[in-house]
Length: 606
Figure (cartoon, rainbow, N blue to C red):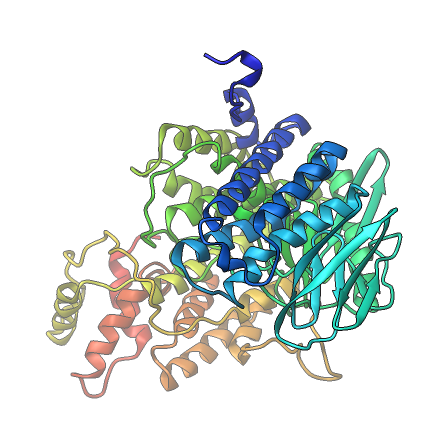
């Protein structure tokens, strides 16, 4: 047996750390353990990728042999181990390694030729050597004139060909990138722009003892979620907005969740900025890019704070999943989740539960700070209920491992008691209505009632029975990922306007410009429920299959008091629509959707 110091080191989490992460009690040391494990994983991926590519030296084209990149990294590590560790912590080294490994295994080109992706390791090595202040010379790929040095910036060169090499050289801490007679000198401060050079911008924020540092990376080709993308340089005005919003978000997190503000900078170090999307806070991350999130420009610091917490939770869980198996592979899209309009596999549902658990904690803290805030109390009431509902649907699933059940139990230990915390009546009622709205719309589009049940109900109606048969069943069929009809989020957008969550563009004298909103939607979200019901009836008379109108009528009727049609439209809209479709084809004149819903609703409890 080799001496202890020569034995391989394995990354492990104690059950104490595991349980702390489940309950949002993780500390800086725990997140550092995840980060170190990711660093080791990337080092292993890099070594395996180079070893596999070395079997076919011609794959790198005219670039230097891949061994030279490994040697340059080894020199950098000998000079400055921290520099190599920082580079391996760069999220896009992970996404590059995963993407390129898949291309190599499949023997295919991706976005651009395979040699360009394999050759990116030279760019990684060069950027590391520059930060370690080595004297060296090598070649790196250039993609449409962009020569990327990860975590540093991009040299802008003549685009003589779509994909071509460039030379990087330096001595005495002065470095240049050259191609086709053009030489770009790197500035002393790499994050600064210079002639022919775009630096990766850094955003730093300090709130008391809490320090945040984020790269605002709009350059790295592997910063996307699925495949390489070209640079999308942010205008200076947008950068200023991002700096302001990041500062606001960090201040909010430090003020209301100080424990989280201590660990978040350890696990989140880079943002990929995207344009603003009206009424949305789009964001995403991938397990291969631990430490990074793709984020759309938010409306304010509160929205960004919630988004950063959401993505940090995804990052943490992604790191944990590289150390622990929480579930067996199961790609079936079979779970309803309120944050998506389509069914999700267990893996996606679990990710969402953990992410929105963190978001719920944020809105809870804001609610405790300002109980009169309509926005905070609504968001807390909504997300605590929606996260809890989804968690309950997962906890007994057969594909969970013992560790997975333990993790969900840990979330439940903290999230469960929050369900009973007091919130204003208005917030609770709005949250309940919003939850019913989305779930009913999902059911209408993704559940297909058994044809035999639909036929039996239609026959019972035609025969004049005053009540439907009690045998139409209550168990839900498996959802289908192919939606039956489109869904409008207009009511949810109008609700966000009502509670102050977003600002919509307005023109003098008219309603806010909410895409897809109908007059009935405006009436409903304004509390004019009788007018809303009439509006949805008119919509259904014109388009009886429209899911948003079916559910809208159910919501408007329910808001006026218990009603059998409301019960059917909110709890079994897919059945109401299927029976109505069948009767429209066989009964003249056809009954209204509301009549069918009221008939079926007799057997649906409140």
